[in-house]
Each structure stands twice: as C-alpha cells, then as structure tokens.
Length: 194
Length: 200
Image (cartoon, rainbow over all chains, first blue to last red; front, side):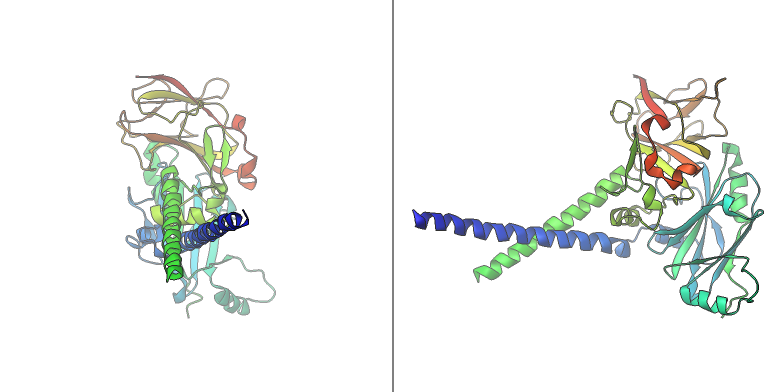
C-alpha cells in the first residue's frame, strides 16, 4: 500500500516540474519577443516614412502612403528628425479654425508628445525638439531675466518623426488641408547649430 | 542523459509555446487592428471600442508590437480619440450585404468623423469618392440630430457608401475632445448606435 502511494507521488512530481518548466520558458519567450518585436520590425511607421521623407523637412504623405486605420478625411505630413545633428525647430502660423494635429513619434513608433492647433498662442507655434543634453546647453545660453518663448520638448530617442494631420472638412478641401501642412516649417534649428 | 533530454524537450516546447503565443497575440491584434493591445487598455461603449492609451507614452507592449508590425500611426491622446466598431448593436459582425443606420449622440468634440474602412483598416473603394463623413458636412434634422446610412446602394440624406463584397469596419474619430482627459468615462448612451436596417 505504502509503496503504491509513493509511486503515484513520483509520477506527479516528474510531470509537474516538466509542465512548469515549459510554461516558465514559454512565458519568458513570449515576453521577450513582444518587447523585441518593435526593434526588429521592418514595416513599422518609421520605415514607411523613411522611405519617402528625407530628414528635417516637411513632406506631405502621398495618397496611400499612410498606415492602416488612418482617417481618410485627414491630410498627413511628416518631418523626420535626427537629433544627433542638433535640435529641431517647428514653427507655424496657424489659421484660426481648421483642425491641425501634431504628434511626436519615437523611432519605435511611440508617441511622446501630442497637441492640436489649440495649443498655439495667438496663432503661433514655436517648438524646439531636443535631447536632455541639448536642453542643458540651450538653457545655459538663455538670458536670465526672460522666460523662453518656445515650447521645449525632450525627445526620448535621437531618431523619430513628427506627424502633422489636418482635417479636410469637406472632400473638396483636401488640397487646402495639404497646403496648411506644407506651410509649416520644420528643420534643424539655425540658432543651435553645433 | 535522460535529464538532458528532458531539459531540451522543455526548452523546445517552451520556445514553441512562447513564439506561438506572441504570433497569436500580434496577429490577432492586427486582425482587431487599431491599437488593439490584446487585453490591456480597451474602453468599450456599445458597439465601439477604443484604445486611448496606445497614443501615449503609456502604450502597452502589445500595442507597440502591433504598430511595429502594421505600421499604424495612432492618434495622440491629446489630439483626439478613435473608436472602432466591427459589429452592430446586436453584436453581429458588420456585413457588406446589409444596410445600417448610425445615429444618436456623439461625445462633445470640436470635430468628429465617421468612416468606413476595410477590416484591415484600408480605405474602401467608393464611386461617390466618400469613405467617410465629417461633423461639418453632415446633414442634420431640425433638432440637430443626424442619421448616417451605411449602404452599398444610394440612399437619401447622409449616405456612407460601402462596397457590396468587402468586409468593413466603422471608425469614429473625436478630435479635440474633453473626453481625452478621461476616456474611460465614456458610456454606450453617449455614443451613436449602429442598427441593422435590412439585408440583401
């Protein structure tokens, strides 16, 4: 009787660690691959945009060059950035009513900042995009008795892109929406050139 | 010897299960599309589902893996919110051979758009060249309400044309909305309903 019990125990004890081992390894592999995937992906938004847009200029995305689940009523434009060449400045004079959307994406497709045209002060937008070190350098040169006039945003990665979207309220207004994006200026900041 | 063999088998099974589950999670998400972290951060309101956090620094790893695969650029949380519907009010998947009516209330937003897309999120062919409506162009009744007819055949009023033979999804985008501050507070009654009118 005793001997039989022990045999059943043995059986259970060898199946349980086996299953647990499989599940632990599966869990680790699952978590690792989910986190690694954005680094390996060949068809992510950055790759799609790099193929058609040179860095530090505003490029209107042609029809069909957007990603899935885009709103067909939005015109889109991008400005790729590479902060290893210096801080990037975005300037805009925005018309009062039309909707303009601004989002700041890392190399890995994560949005680290976003805003609409409502964030503009008196119709003007002046954004300086930089790294932590570049911000320190810029702040060291700031006049002490004045507040900076620009919005300074720290990018978590050196590479990435700004995505501009503008709403064509009526189907015939797509050209105007694209023109609003084309009117933005985005490029290496002339004042902060190394 | 047997012990080593066992370890190799455990490693192989674990690897298979791990890769399989990742593939399932991401492909399944791709099928659901639109920032669908498989389990995290979804907000449901009637037939509509949104993933507000996918457009922020708090995007979950599944949403990021999905975007890396499909190249999607989500809407930033402060830009607006998107909601996707793959089924009507009764929970049946949207079918291209049926007509639907979208009506009811819409959360306060400076602008909104309603568009029909393929189930993979691509624009659908339309003779009227209209894949969607914006809040500015919609025809409203005397009380300010609206009704959008989703159909393959021409309809009076707000007609959202869809092809006869392709699976579709509906997408509602709210731009510059106060709901961005608390997206998880949205309720089904605040969102438009999707009702089946009839099928061919």
